[in-house]
Length: 219
Image (cartoon, helix red, strand yellow):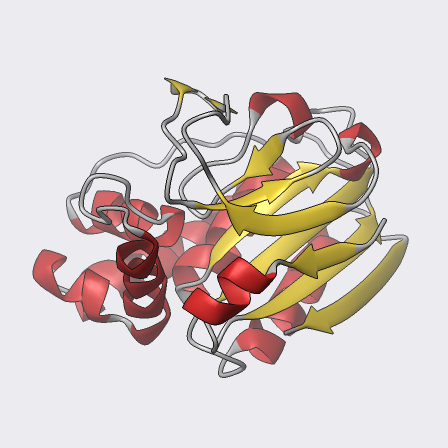
């Protein structure tokens, strides 16, 4: 499976760098030990940021600017890292989903990067990051049809699989996922990407039975 960035995205987002992780793992119920790490990070977010400061984090601000450049309102369609951090600061509960999904969420809130998480075995052919159109039908996880026109959109041969706002039901992580694809979206450039990859590796090894881990930087 190749992952490419379209010329349209490269032109609109010249600083974009991707960290693409492919790994073999085991999913399951999130452990209490992991959730203690999540709680610690959530408390750090609450003590560090006011609600109006979250969108000023460099990684989040750069993702929001990409939305604006492509014609999407980032206040209506928030990047997932921003949405998670806002929930935390507002003390709205963050639900446990599964080990893999919760690991991705922890890396995201710590780094500020919006991260796509996919069951790689459900992806058809190669993946290209382009721009969503009015003709793209996209069923977002837990939120129904999402208007992806003007959003950065990952597509495989069948259609859209993910945006920085939400991933698609068709290729989502489930309890049976063993082949994980993570795409860390660095619209602010390389800064912090390697640290996010290292954090991902550490958590996957500790909590998700990591059997293999490959990373590719694109952009």
